[in-house]
Length: 210
Image (cartoon, rainbow, N blue to C red):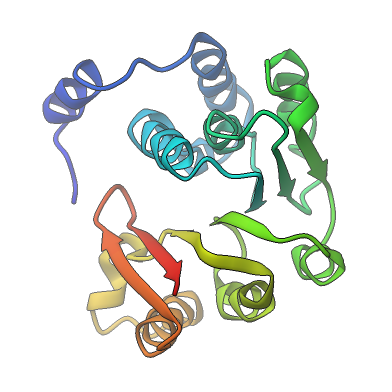
């Protein structure tokens, strides 16, 4: 759903306030990156934070760090001894999340890995409570196949950009749009999962392992 600036401002004024560190990170992301729209932003960030707090995860896996905004939002819900592993293969923006992770109260709970997500998932031998997919849209199906055996019963996968600017409901036939359509069909047809799509920003699927 495309919100008017006035309605977006009203929503932001009536939800939990954005932490100061995240506000600084959001500002620097817009100043120093070429694709600042990739950042989660205030509303989505507060949704991620609240969902994480509800789940109270011991282990979160995030695929797609970008500048670390969503990482810090998700970290707010970790248990006392919990951790978040965040993976991004882009070395050019890695300095920004590292800078803000170091300043965060969650710094000791964040493990930032700058390599291929498929390799990280394959090597992971821990049970995952919560996953946030936000990179490599064409590999969402692969990542989910790799993740399912490692996701606890009742565990949650959050998949971002699932409406792809509305293109999934059009005749668009480009590679990324069709990859997301295929992922949506796969999740909907998997009897071991249940799913709902939130039309927030570019769409977020909340997928639960039964």
